[in-house]
Image (cartoon, rainbow, N blue to C red):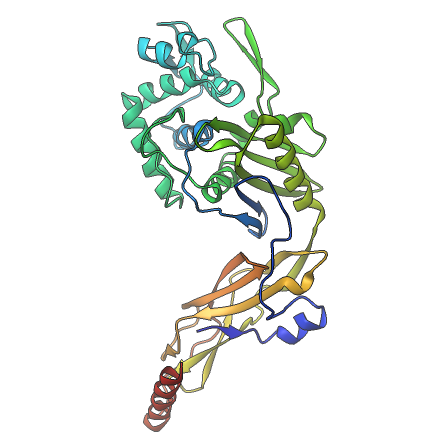
Length: 385
């Protein structure tokens, strides 16, 4: 049951909150699906059909690398480990395949550190298959590991069937989960994230440049990956860092490489320029109150476990809507620290941020007559609702 924030007056004074109906998006893009998120605050700056299931193409390689990076971080692998190039890897993803390749030689052994660079910089399909076979025995087994690992890190919709992203029935992702995957990789594996900004890599005497067009633009880009399938069009996961602030964006469904480069540049540049950071609640500051059933008092105060900050539009600030949402009324007794609900903030039509809220105090049960009154009140409210 939504409850307007106690702090609504302060927001209104700054023209930051509104209960007006949401209007059109603040930004227009030729991408069919798009998602932009601020790395520090988790503010979703833009979302357009972000949960549509689409083929990942080479963007699946982000998940391939997450599995590898996780194995390195946990000590299962080392960068010096050698992987054998099988005939399947050579034929399916190498020079005979006509696809993106690092030109790995058949039956050669390659250190993992070089395979990583081949996959990230050169989008090497042979490198992906070599890693998959070496880690899991087959690409199919490795793809299952990819899906299982996706669930472990909170990606609930993505399903992987190949390590390369080459077309396969049932292989799907969303731009929301791709952007969240990029953010996860940057946050969890800083020592490996640097490979995404590497301008080129040479293997088997063949130098190839990084395929990410954002890296050549003066916008602070340092990642991450491009992809293309006939079904989903041209896609990209990109990240920029400027003045200590970082954004991740995932876009798909564009008509050409040129459109992909331009739309990615525009949306990331807009995300950097069009928002101001606002701390709306400090650490341990009471955010609002949830109605209490059968308690010694009628409500329980709520707070987050950390300061709550959000990026708000420089213009159209009346587009911001904030509400406390919880299943209520909450039944007493309630212990301090109990999860109760969430503070949800919308920018226009986009649910921009969701912060868990917890009981800021302990409230015991009230006397019998008080509990009876609360019961009648809730029954009446429920009937009217």
